[in-house]
Length: 73
Image 1 (tube, rainbow, N blue to C red):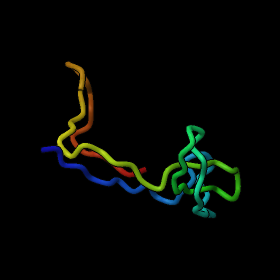
Image 2 (cartoon, one colour):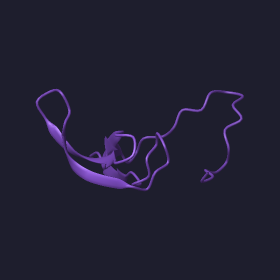
Image 3 (cartoon, one colour):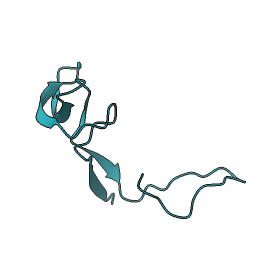
């Protein structure tokens, strides 16, 4: 059995860092639509959330200097 989780994306523009964000239904180009955050400053759009396999793990190459924990920047 697969377990899934929903990861919500913060309403902060990844392009310009603006907090002036709206949400709307956006066509994905393949006949579907999804709710997306839309930056009112630069027009960038990104999904409101994504679904991930709960059991998924990150692959870290041998000898990697991956951090032990994530740090918010």
